[in-house]
Image 1 (cartoon, rainbow, N blue to C red):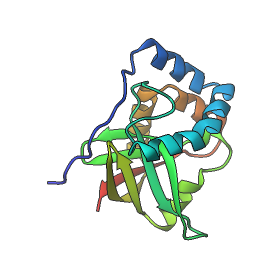
Image 2: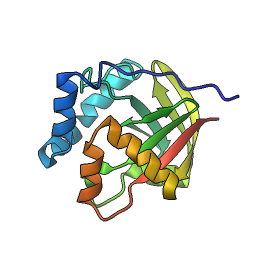
Image 3: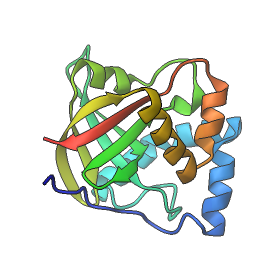
Length: 168
């Protein structure tokens, strides 16, 4: 049996700040604000071993995903929301509904080995692309976390890449 990933969810997704943040995140202005906060959020998550986020106690499961740059070979770290499913974490390349896939998704396609930081632990993982009906089912779980994902999907013509992360 594969060991489940630790769970870390700061705050409640039902709190008034979380509901407000979720509505705001789905707007174009909200997406720009969150994108601008991403470098600061990455530093906070790195310093707290992925226990706390700049977004505050909004009840969203946040991880740090470290991939290897497909061109540079350098380690690249990105804070992401995830769907936690015991021994599997799912991540989605929404890029806030932008026209292009986020670089980390191309990095995983080139080299599926990565590291997840979650709840104070650094865990080596392997990524596998999720497609078809399975991807649609996982996408709906992301929408349950925040409706912003539905807005992101509507903003772009590209398919939002979803990856399953499992322990090595």
